[in-house]
Image (tube, rainbow, N blue to C red; front, side, top):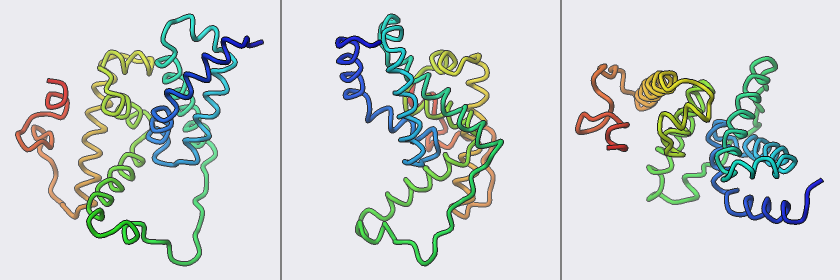
Length: 197
């Protein structure tokens, strides 16, 4: 049974972190807002039931984030066994970019390409990239959240970035492959060294 103080503490946590957790859930589910909302709701329900125990560890944020990643992996495994069938839309789909305006078209196209490319990655690689670059966790912190070794995080990050470069190159009509030493930065530095010193 939850006490009034636990309920207030939980509500404050949700109020302060729900936007960030929803964005994380969206990235983990491959940019599906409905799936992300379902995933986050499920995790918050579980967290509420264990709130007193979660708060004993100190900051509940990392614990709930790990719950979110684990629930996402569970969901992915379930879908792999019983895949969802895509919804077929009758008629033309609305052109979102045309409604926003011509000045935002390029930015929306790039963002859409990134979302679609990220969604095409395997769940484990997507989780590593989201935790490393969106949540800005170190390799060790990412390994702790995922329950794996730092070496696995490095390998998954490298493979995911390589796949993302290939997906984006193909989508942009660029048929040349990226050289092993080229990490996609204009100055030749890797994304990790460019963003983390």
